[in-house]
Amino acid sequence: MNVVPTVSVLGVIKTRLKGAKKGHSLLKRKSDALTIRFRSILKRIIETKEGMAEVMGAASFSLVQAQYAAGDNIKQMIMQSAGRRATVQVASGMDNVAGVQIPVLRRVRVSEQVGGGVTVETGDRDAGDAEARGLTGLGKGGQAVEACRRSYLKAVDLCIELASLQTSFHLLDEAIRVTNRRVNALEYVVTPRLENTVAYIEGELDELQREEFFRLKKVQAKKKRDEALKRELDAENAARAEVDVDAEIQAAIATGEFGDLHLSAQAQEEVRKVTGDLAAGGGIPHGDDDDGSDLLFF
Image (tube, rainbow, N blue to C red; front, side, top):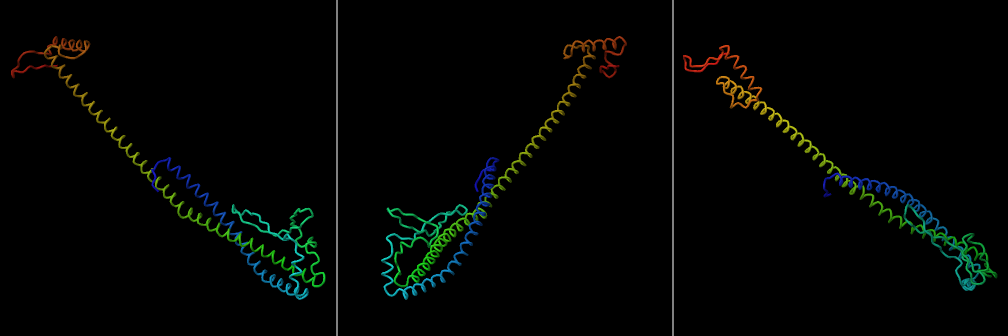
């Protein structure tokens, strides 16, 4: 990731890394919850399909029994006694599984009332609709027709349940694939990339800190060398000035002239006093000696 290695950028990347890890944890738990529900639905689908064969076989056998008991005109008899509105309808609802909306289908019984009103009942599925059936099978085969109706109602219940399970199965399967792709992307792509970026920025900041520390040490060492050199130069200049002053004083004492000396009045007075004392005691002979040089004796 192309970033500028600064402290502010490091804070932003660390915040993104923290969010990526938290998102990975949440998506992982969501995937686990969806997987648990997915396996539960798969188990119910297998059980429903296994029971479907038995139920459909029993319904087909009861239809044959009803045809045998009621005779060949059972089709016309059933059609004549059927109402204008279906007494069995399917209602749909929604179920939330870890944020995934899956449909839930159920069978409801609709009974007609006088006046055109329609009442949806979800209680006992097999009771209360005798008027809708009318006098079906009153002459012969009534019990066989009723048993056939109950058998097919059970088969319809299983078909509705199986349709609801199959729909939920496909939706959960797609949701699990999408969630797993996101989990894998966060775990194997986003998080390692952010961690590498954090390591790169921290390494660059450490290198900059070491360079700054080394630069400060060099500057401090140079300052110390400059101060030592300045002290040596000051000491050397002071010693040279002291030697020059001593030489001038010696020359002034020898000649007795103090006009060219850059001394204070008190210092000049002291020099004159010393010179006078030495002259009074004969310590300052003037004139040429045997060698032709002026000598000054103390």
